[in-house]
Length: 417
Ligand code: ATP
Ligand code: MG
Image (cartoon, rainbow, N blue to C red; front, side, top):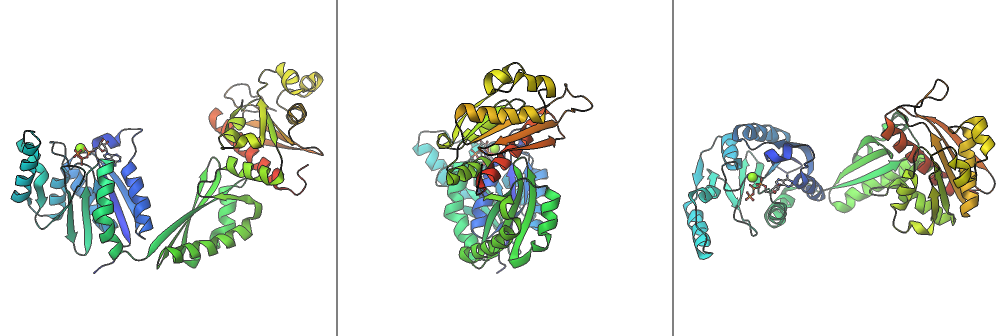
């Protein structure tokens, strides 16, 4: 029998095509199949339409060894998955008389009227098998085709999950080839192209696939390894991770769901340091990011938002003459904000941010996107001048990510001072 290595998922439902809706069933199945060593290689969302769904099923059968559909198995007119399956496989749709009687009896025993429409749930393509639904009335449908499997499950997440665990997972794992393990490695303070260049020769080695992604918290490397079992797959990931870590050194800050603020908190905790913030253009976003971490009160002292120029001296002890001389968006003010808030709060490290987030307020020598970041410690203050491209939201977010990454590195120094 043909092994199952790859899967293609189809989410059926016109409502899923609307903006803001997501295919949560597909996310869940992807994770679950991955643990069985089956890689999801294609995902499609299609509206409630039998002909279009049939087209998508035909394509999915070319993409994956296993095709799983969710949704559109209910009794109503817009539930067209059974019909789409029959069309895609070129088989007639047949009613299962025995199932129909059982369903009718179930309705009647509960005092509910059995409408002819309900019987649609007992139709399946010729030769298909039923997948029992212990939580609902619509059974799933399983079809075999040239060693491949097509399985239709209801859209209701609880029913879908239960049926997957009870019926699909045992079948799939018996035919899966080993296990798939995944890991995300997170990199701060680097550009995607430079990381890519540094690591490119490692992609695909040791049987691990590597995908590089840029996000607003930095770069993410997604590692995926197939192995004879979960342990072998994990060992392959461990080996490649060690090689990558050797090359990247401090640039690597975490893995999987570890965020940049979590890495900052860990570095501060390890060094026994605390931090305070004085933010002008990011107006508290850095403080908010730091305090997203549970337990941040152990190392975050507090922050101020001296947005107006005349409040910079009042809230963060920035000397009035420094603001007058250098302007609010300047290296001098960033340094003074960091040093001032550090002194005032008694924190080990102070962070100052000032910049022009736009869209207005820029000039030739101080354009939109210009941001000054400073980190003050007991012995020295570091400063960076950034020139971001992007809109207001992006400029503010990138400034926060930059400050977090520098803070993490500063806290990891032997002498953070
Ligand atoms: P039913 O027997 O309830 O009619 P069905 O198979 O027809 O089941 P749908 O009507 O398509 O399923 O969906 C039922 C519910 O499940 C809806 O609330 C829908 O929003 C949700 N749902 C459907 N597909 C998905 C999906 N891919 N991800 C998350 N939720 C989904
Ligand atoms: Mg439906």
